[in-house]
Length: 191
Image (cartoon, rainbow, N blue to C red):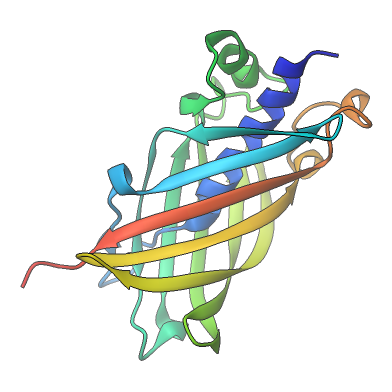
């Protein structure tokens, strides 16, 4: 049971979290700034955390703090860009047992509406399509106005087996739960 296979599972999680960070195609939606956005996945292999990052994320977000329930998001993560820091690990993660990037090069999170939780916190609910599976997801997101735009941040604990990521033979070696974290930056529209 190799560490690189654990890292492959982490890549999967990163893809999921990217998908969850979301962007929408509704009227008024604005593109995110991919260079200032980040999606990572952290898995635990034999109790040791292993983190990878998706290097390509794109999408749009529609958000009005006065009417968060009308918000929408659609975020696409390029699963071929999952990076565990080593070429061999990255190749392994792309294989059919893990992300199956050749057949499923994209993970997509789609959301409609945010429920206010108080302050700058909201609950976002949507669907994540990954590796040919679609799963309903819900998590808390924090929205902050920052230099020249807005940042949407949060994390989702996902189950890799919900998406057929890694076989059950990895149970006990790699945790089923993968923590996907996201920080998505949307620049303010030019006046």
